[in-house]
Amino acid sequence: MSMNLITVLYLIASVCFIQALKGLSHPTTSRRGNLFGMIGMAIAVLTTIALIYKLGAELATQGIGYVIVGLLIGGTAGTIMAKRVEMTKMPELVAFMHSMIGLAAVFIAIAAVAEPQSLGIVAAMADPIPAGNRLELFLGAAIGAITFSGSVIAFGKLSGKYKFRLFQGAPVVFKGQHLLNLAVGLVIVGLGLMYTFTGDVTAFAILVVLAFVIGVLIIIPIGGADMPVVVSMLNSYSGWAAAGIGFSLNNSMLIIAGSLVGSSGAILSYIMCKAMNRSFFNVILGGFGAEAGSAAAGEQVQRNVKSGSSDDAAFLLTNADTVVIVPGYGLAVARAQHALMELAEKLTHRGVNVKYAIHPVAGRMPGHMNVLLAEAEVPYEQVFEMEDINSEFGQTDVVLVLGANDVVNPAAKTDPKSPIAGMPILEAYKAKTVIVNKRSMASGYAGLDNELFYMDKTMMVFGDAKKVIEDMVKAVD
Image (cartoon, rainbow, N blue to C red):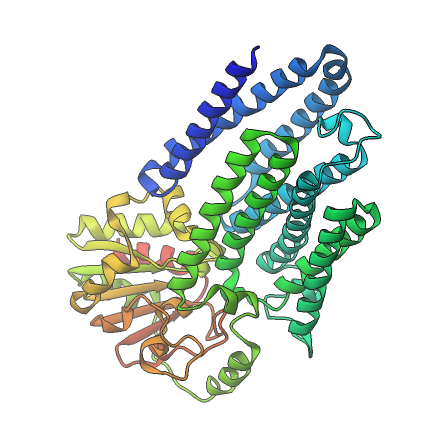
């Protein structure tokens, strides 16, 4: 296979990746986007194997076996995980994949530093690695290490089942934390520059270790409320790590694919921050704040709410002309999306106009609620983004909030001193009647009390979302 053909195939794979990102931008085209991504990756992998043979028969014979074994192990593990993973665990799976990309970048950088001639960076072992390549290896290894350790912490926070304090959803803060992060960051940069200009392998090894450390330090102070931003941010990091390694290996496919992932992740991070009225640096420098959570906890104790049963909720829903459903993470935890779809269908058959309202940061990763509803085969034309549905809440008869909290909290609009003041929310409080299903009155990830729950127009229905919705379905029948 000629180098011109390899270049063309890499170009085709790159176009497939671009089409994949375009397809994944909307639920109706997401399957097509995934298909483009798989085709592009298949072309890239097969072309890279052909490139190995192009470099020489001896090199191919020595290395192709390891490549095939790696493909089989990774492909098998990925297939098993994809088949077993539940929609509620999708954020953890994404964090896990980010960590693997980061770790792969670190391993490749270490291999390139140890034996640069094997990867075609230099002609012979004795030849020094060019300064430009050393800079690329420093950046790729550092970003990869930060991505790996940061993603491990994000995985633990998202799973919510580990008792180790670093894996708790609440921010982990201590005195002098930001100064420590700054100091470690400056040392990493200094060691990276030292390695770039001198080729000191010891400096490279220390900076990699410190990069693993700072990956933990920058994620532990971020609370659960900011997890959607963290997931998209780590996605961006993994892309830039791959791009940096691509420059070192002179592999155009890695450069293009990494740049696409890195830039799209950065744009998504910006969109997530905008949806929460936060700055990117504000998120990185700490979560929604432990102070807000502790202050709000005491406010919830003595307040009364109006509660009702599933039958009461079903009566309100069946007598409404318009119903807007606001899904949240509680719906995902209960795995109630299929029961919700059944309820919506029965209401639609009764002449009720049913719509779904999606907040950009609902759930624990960008698009979490969209994926959940797509799995239940909810018609795409019934699903609306926040900016498209907010104007309709004032004319809506009933809003059914399922497990959502912070994204419907009126404090963002009414309380300028609230930690979420100015954050765009789904304006459910404007509807004529609001039904809220939660397990308890516990606060959301932001640690704030929600005034929506105490309004006269609001009826709380406590219990597991799946059980409550199934009881609503029976009552509707």
